[in-house]
Length: 358
Image (spheres, rainbow, N blue to C red):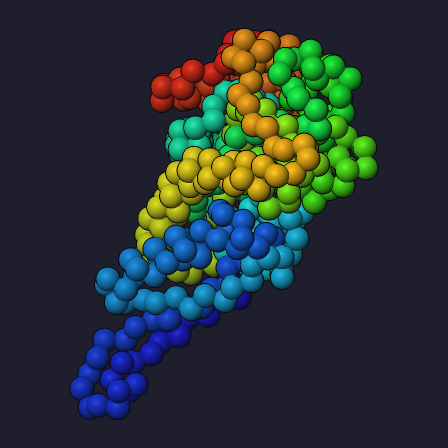
C-alpha cells in the first residue's frame, strides 16, 4: 500500500529558514519474473529511474520504491489480479496469459509472420490502445492504468535434426508455449505444450524433437545443447503485456507524478522495444560461440524465403478463427484485427500474409 508523507527540508537541516515541503510517496512495484528478464530489469533501470529523474527536476515529489520482483508477491498466473486488487501498486501485467480476460490483447498471437519489428508493433498497439475503446476497456475494466507496453523478440525453430524445408517438419513433435502451438498447424508437425522451464527436459527425454522459442529464452536455458540446429524462421514477435498501476492508487497521486509516470512509461516502452531488436542478435552470437565445441555443434541457418512462405501459406486461417470466436462474444475482433494489420502496413511493414483479408 502506498504512503505519502511530507519532509520539511528546513527541519532536516535544523535551520530556522522556511523551506518548501517535498512530498515523499511510497509505492510498491512488483513482477512475477526476476529482473534478469530484460523487460523486468528495465522497469528498474528505465521506468523507475526516469520517473525519479523527471520528478527531481522540479523537486516537489520523490518516490520511495518498495521492490518485490521475481515472484516474491505473486506468480505469473496472477499478474493482472495482483495489480487490480492492489496487492502491488505497480506491476508488469502478463496479458499473454490472460486470454479469457483480455482476448483482444491476443491478436498478435494469431497473426504469425506479420512483423518481427518490435518498435513498430508496440507503436501500433499503443495507437490502438488510444483509439480503440474496446481494447482500452479490456485493460481499464480491471481497475488498472496502462503505463508502458512490452513484447517478445521474434520466434525461431530449435531442433535435434536440421530443418531446411517445410517437409522436414513432417511427423516432428515441437514444443511451443500455449497458443503458439497453433503456428505449427498445417506443417505436418504436432505441437507439445510447454514452457522455457520444460523445453530442455522435453527434448532431452524425447517428449519433443525441438521447440519454437526466442533467442533470449534459448540462451539462458541452454536449449541449444539438446537442440543444436537453429533455423532462423522469423515467425514474428508477440505483444506480451505492460507495466500498469492500480487505478485507486493512481487517482491519489498528484498530477505532476502522474505526468512523470506516463512519460517514463513511454520512455520505457521505446527503450524496451529497441532492446528487443538488439539483444537477441547478441544472444544468437553467444549461442553459436557456446555451442561451437559440443557434439553436434550448433548450426544456425536462415530458412529459405520460399520455404518460409510455404509455411505461412500452409497455416489455416488462425486470425479468422480467433476473430469469429470473439465476434460471437460481442467484441469487435474482426475490426480490431483489420486495424492492427493496417497499422503495420502504414508503418512500412510487409506482413507475409494478410490475415485480415482472410
